[in-house]
Image (cartoon, rainbow, N blue to C red):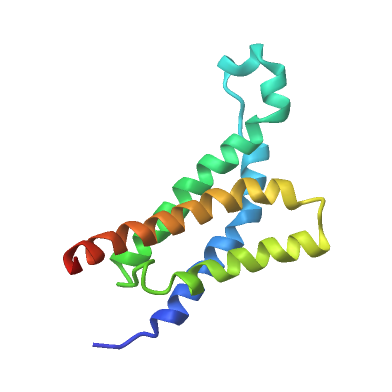
Length: 132
């Protein structure tokens, strides 16, 4: 059995998640608008792209976490810091150098961070219950 460096793979999957932020934002902006929302132009102009981006970020990050756990046997709770480091670094770089894309990137980054943290927390809770 080939041993893998789980910190490195957590960092690689974190880079994959952070790298999808641009794709998620472009997908949210270009997503078709349902006919149900045509009577709400305020919602379409202000919130539709952000809602689509956030929802897709939840789904894509959840799928990446599932693939990470199922196929690579790397749990998000083992090395949460290395998993979240690329996303947090990407947010910090956007704050420092490009405030124009910050808000749109946060529509993708916050749901991704929430999924990563909740996955890590949910995997650790049973470990602490058995110790008590």
